[in-house]
Amino acid sequence: DTGVSQNPRHKITKRGQNVTFRCDPISEHNRLYWYRQTLGQGPEFLTYFQNEAQLEKSRLLSDRFSAERPKGSFSTLEIQRTEQGDSAMYLCASSSSGSGGNEQFFGPGTRLTVL
Amino acid sequence: AQKVTQAQTEISVVEKEDVTLDCVYETRDTTYYLFWYKQPPSGELVFLIRRNSFDEQNEISGRYSWNFQKSTSSFNFTITASQVVDSAVYFCALSERNYGGSQGNLIFGKGTKLSVKP
Image (cartoon, rainbow over all chains, first blue to last red; front, side, top):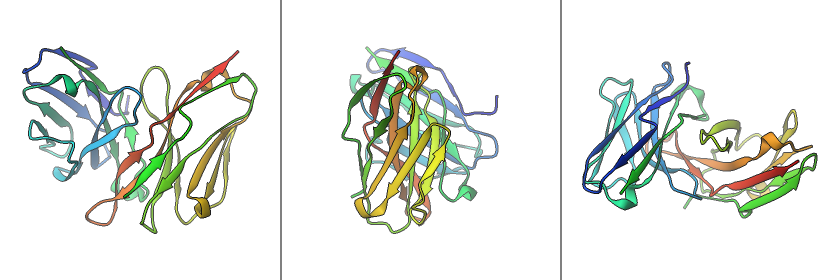
């Protein structure tokens, strides 16, 4: 399977706990994006990497959120001190900067439930 | 500000009917890209099409067709002879130019839930 993969697929945690999600992009893609999707809404942009550099962060990305892509391959998204409002589907996408129009391919997502 | 509006929240049709999903966008960029994605009940977003702002030709792919009109800032999606397997949430998206000038993250509409009944 050469698509975008995400782990875990589901995560249930208690408020105040820290969680970490992983995304493995399509191998030849140098760009990696994180989005958040809540029920009945479209995905909302969180942050984006080109290779290992984090180039943009949305104002939705509070100080409790941090993302890394240490070697320009997989990425992790960590949420510290989770709140019930963090419950959502977290989506990862990848693309190639050479594709011009930035066609992004999405993974299956990690569904986070904060109790 | 850049924005994508999908005014139709839900549409229900009977199999074999044609259906059009509307998308209206706002941007100040002269170069931009528009996308449609399908999100079936399984949840994974599936890329359908990308159009750039300089190409207003309509596109047809099997039962799917897209009508891009810059004059009305619309990028509508038509499914001909709908099938039950077309049931999904469909998202229209606009590519936002990032700080470096290249195309960056996508701005999505709220989606249109299409239900195709047998």
